[in-house]
Image (cartoon, rainbow, N blue to C red; front, side, top):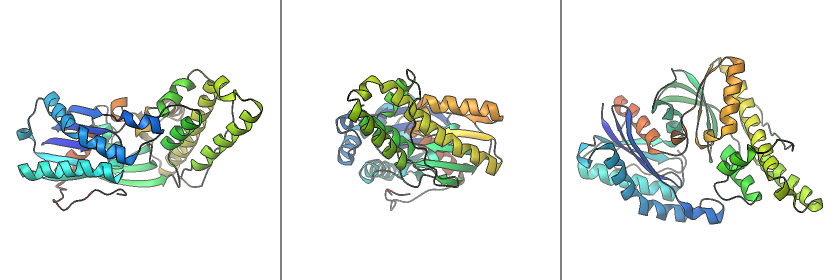
Amino acid sequence: MPIILAIESSCDDTSAAVIANGEVLSNVTAGQAVHEEFGGVVPEHASRAHQRNIVPTIVVALSRAGKSADDIDAVAFTRGPGLIGSLMVGVSFAKAFALARDLPLIEVDHMQAHVLAHFAEDPKPDFPFLCLTVSGGHTQLVVVKTALDQEIIGRTIDDAAGEAFDKSGKMLGLTYPAGPEIDKLARRGNPTIKFARPDPGELNFSFSGLKTSILYTLQKKIKTEPDFVKENLADICASIQDTIVFILLRKLTMAVEQTGLTRVALAGGVSANSGLREGLQALAKEKGWSVFIPRIEYCTDNAAMIGVAGAFKFVAGEFVGQEVAPAARF
C-alpha cells in the first residue's frame, strides 16, 4: 500500500495528512479565526489564509508522520465541492508537488470523503451501509454500496443543517461558527419553544423554512419581551437543536425503512453535535440498528478522510493528470 500525502482546503480549514497502508500517521489542521467577526466565512479571506497556512501545515504533517517528501508515493486532494478560491490553493499545491516529484494525483470528492472517514480507524462498517452526511454546506442520505460506489437518495433542497445552526446562532448574537456554542448552551436548556419542521417530501430535507420560523418567533417574542433572548438563551438553543435533530432523524428512519439497511453511519461536521450523536444512538438502540460515528477529529473537515478516500482510489487505479482543475460543484 502507498504512502499518500492528502490535502484538504475546501472551505476555511487548511488540513494535511499522511496515510500509509491505510493507516493515518498524521492529521494536521489549521483553522481561520479571521471569519469570527463577520459571522460567516468570507471567501477572499479564506483563500488568502490557505495560502499562508498550506506550506507550514504540510511540513508539520510530514514531521508528525515521521516522513519526508521523498517518502510520498501519491498526492490526494479535495477537488470539490467547496469555495473555488479555497480549492484553488489546495489543488495548485497538490499539482505542483506531484509534478516536481513525478507522483500520481488523486482527486477526491469532499462529500464522498466524509463518508469514508469511517475507515480512518476501527470499528469500520461493512458494505453496504446507510450514511447521514451533515455539514455546513450539505445534508445528504447516502447508500454506500462500496467505497467508491455511493448513491445519494436524499438531500437538502435549499439550505444545509450546519448553515441552519450557524445562521440561528447569528440571530442570537453567538460567534461563528455557532454550532458548537448552540450545542453547549442546549445542554443547559429545555426544548420548550416550537419551531417549524419543514418536510419537502420523499427523503429530502429543507432548512430554509426553519430559519425563517426561528427569525419570526424571536422577533415576535422580543416585541413584548425585549430581553427574551438573553433570559431564555439556553432554552432557545435547546429548541433549535431539538428541531434540527428531529428533522434529520425523521428522514434517516424513513431511509432505513425504504432501503432495509440497518448499518447506519453519521458523517460531516454536524455529526460532532452531541444532541445528534446521542439522538442517533438512542434511536439505534430502540430500532436495533448498528451505528458508526467517527470521533470528532474525523467529523469536521480534515485531510485524513481525503487520504483514506485517496487510498481506495489508488488501489482502483483512479488517477488524474495535471490538467485537473478545482470544481466548486463536484
